[in-house]
Amino acid sequence: MGPWNTRMSNLPDQNIEMTLPQDVARQEFDEIIYHITHDVRASLRALKSLPEWIREELEADRTSLTSGTHDALLMMETHAQRADQLLLDLLTYSRVGRIRGDTGVVALGKAVETAIQTSEIPEDFSVEVDLGVHAVAGVTEEYVLLFMTLLSNAVKHHDMGKGTVTITSTRQGGDLLISVADDGPGIAEQYREKVFGMLETLKSRDDCEGSGLGLPIARKIVDLYQGSVTIADHRPARGTRVEIRLPAHVAVLTAVG
Image (cartoon, rainbow, N blue to C red; front, top):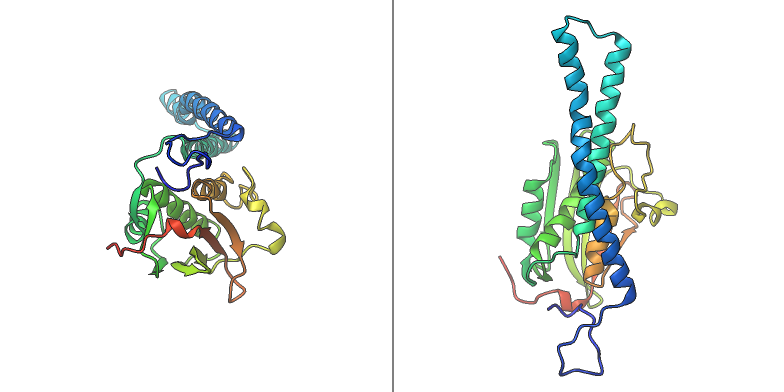
């Protein structure tokens, strides 16, 4: 068990974990999300296929698509895909912390590398990595998902066809500080907390595809380690810097390749 688990401090010699009421409620909520999204996705698969079935039927009858029907089918496909992505992200959110792997030493460099390889990063985007702290205590899959989520968020909300994302890790004031910064349009200060809300987006989904669950997933992962994640000031002014601060005990002094 990791040191972030809540234990009864007046029973130091007993391996007893204390589950708080809010933890139980959160686990029940995650279970509900998991089962609902799993079942709804099964029905959604048919809706995603329906436009193609309609086209095939019309072609078999040698009936031409009108422009109105064509647009309606495209709209159906777009909204079905958005709904499916939302359900996928909800599934991911519900799984965070619910089924955890073994805790151990996580090589940050390898976690970042896996996240880069797994994420859909356009060729014109580069990821620069400068790690002062190379290892942390935790679950590898959670750190990979954390970096995947933040990389995807940086690329998705960039306003240009190319850009740079910089990932760093340092010790600061006894804490472990992980930073994921981009050179995109940035987030105005008055919206920096709002973007961590469930399903919150600052742009219309017609302008930027996204479920509004990326940063909430990141925060939920960081919460597992009793840390904090915020949008920090970025210099130069352009760009967004997501700052993750973890307690000192999470960092591992031993260097890991």
